[in-house]
Amino acid sequence: MSSRYREVYGQWQANPEAFWAEAAKAIDWVKPPKKIFDADAGVYGRWFPDATCNTCWNAVDRHVKKGRGAQTAIIYDSPVTNSKRKISYEQLQLEVASLAAVLQDRGVGKGDRVIVYMPMIPEAVVGMLACARIGAIHSVVFGGFAAKELATRIDDAKPKAVLAASCGIEPGRVVAYKPLLDQAIELSASKPTSVIMLQRPQGEATMIEGRDHDWAKLVADAKAKGKRADCVEMAATDPLYVLYTSGTTGVPKGVVRDNGGHMVALAWSMKALYGIDPGETFWAASDVGWVVGHSYIVYAPLLAGATTIVYEGKPIGTPDAGAFWRMIEEYKISALFTAPTAFRAIKKEDPNAEFLKKYATKSLRTLFLAGERADPDTVAWAEKILGVPVIDHWWQTETGWCIVGNPIGLGMLPVKHGSPTVPMPGYDVQIVDEAAKPVAANQMGSIVVKLPLPPGCLPTLWNQDDRMKESYLADFPGYYKTADAGFKDDDGYLYIMGRTDDIINVAGHRLSTGGMEEVLASHPDVAECAVIGIKDSLKGEAPCGFVVLKAGVTKSPMEIEKEIVKLVRDKIGPVAAFKIAVTVGRLPKTRSGKILRGTMKKIADHDPWTTPATIDDPLILEEIEAALKQHGI
Ligand code: COA
Ligand code: AMP
Image (tube, rainbow, N blue to C red; front, side, top):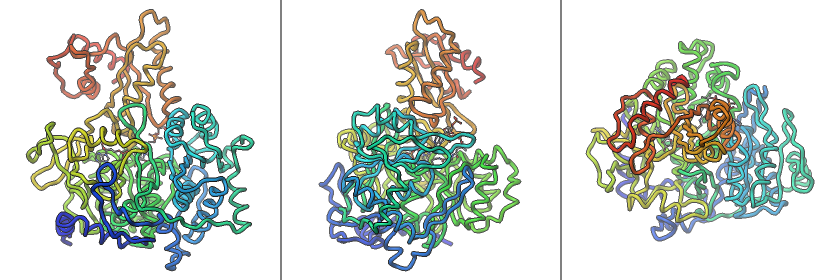
């Protein structure tokens, strides 16, 4: 089949507003947009400025109204608790409207923030949709973050209420969420007035009188009294959610998503990019705490009237490397979306894909990969074992949907391993030098997107227009800085090679080395430190911390290294996967005092390296090499 991509991209280029006005017809509006884009509003303009709508209506109620009530909306499959459940659109509507009424009873309304701190259970989705229904702004915090990270988010979002579960379940251990939540609320200056706690039998939470309420009881009461909240009319430009993501410091960025543009972009992507029709089953094997979870576990599949999957398990070990194949067979999944690291994990455990032979996976049409660079070996392996197209696509928390991809719904373009293919309509992607001048094909440069960003992308950072401008719009005037570097080939295919800032990508999770350095520096025996991301065959990258100890420290370096590893786990969380701390006598620096992290990374990765001309003392690099060797690197 020939692809319609060029024709469709051309339509967008010729008239972006007409393109998005057409795409907006997929949405039920309260007041349909008359104006499509207002260049003078917001930081760089706003989409659908005069329209009103409700995201929950579009994700749930309208499907019930149009006869999809009995269709499964959410499949919950939890190998870690041995449970499975299906929730129809009609049941989802009841659950969401009842919880929304509970929130209203607790004084939560339009514009109020609600933190959602929950594992991969359907109630997390119900919680998000209940907020959307009444115009409250949810902010989901990933369960693998520690109390301090949660506290930072509470302080910034100032939530009126928290929706939480008593525990999460990781293979072999129950992670009690409640003590982390209590500690976080204690640490934060802003105190939520209500905590609505879903008690899980694997680990029940101790409740604090007055503040904490039992989720199940409140919802049962609301149902018994027939209390259901209606969908509230929202401006298309009102925030739907705030999702915090790593910035270059320990203070995360609150990425804001609006209601209208978000729905339009996601609905367009479900068909044109992922090729999914209503009634089909789409599985994003991620977590609701990440952007992939927000967009492609919760909102996009439900906006499209598809069936989505909430999977509480891992690609391996729950119980084995056949977990994904079982899911595909059992639920007749049409498309799977995950991070390359999941496939690296399966490949490592079962290189000949023996487990795959036990399952019929013929329903699967496409595998989509994103979240980190898809290495050609893993892509080739996945293609070989599954016999379906494997589509890498590139995007960010900030954009909320794909920047560069291969639009299956418009007809697949030829796949080139190592490239996520071409820009989606809405994105004019350019490779530029430091002076914002476009570079020639095949030349590396900074990847930027010409403003305005399309619907769905962040309009700003929560309460921080200036940080938005400074972080993304100041370096390349007229463009959004992606902070990724790469090149375009002669066919216009993009290659994403790495970040230009200190963000690293560990198992598809985005982490700030700057944030980790802040933690290392807080150890009383550490004089100086540097954290870099080093190559890891499973997780893509792994953080590696170097510390210089203060003079007169009597503890052994090994003891301090252990303490540092624990400190990062306690302050940032297990998700940081910080396991390597290396004590060194000094750090390599330029004569002006800049730490030579790039050279340290090359040494740790065993890549060819040369001594930078500006180095203060070249001998230090040999010391670094020796210290890494002692740690088996
Ligand atoms: N709550 C509490 N702890 C969590 C958690 C959660 N929701 N999610 C992860 N953790 C913990 C893990 O248990 C692990 O702890 P450990 O150091 O005690 O082993 C740590 O955080 C690191 O987690 P992770 O990086 O996920 O590693 P893993 O070894 O548990 O699993 C993979 C490795 C590759 C199987 C896993 O990363 C994976 O499935 N990735 C899929 C990709 C993905 O979901 N990407 C998200 C963006 S698309
Ligand atoms: P996040 O905001 O967590 O989705 O992380 C976004 C970052 O992950 C991007 O800026 C890239 O550095 C990286 N990334 C995401 N998808 C890809 C991809 N397909 N190829 C290469 N890098 C990717």
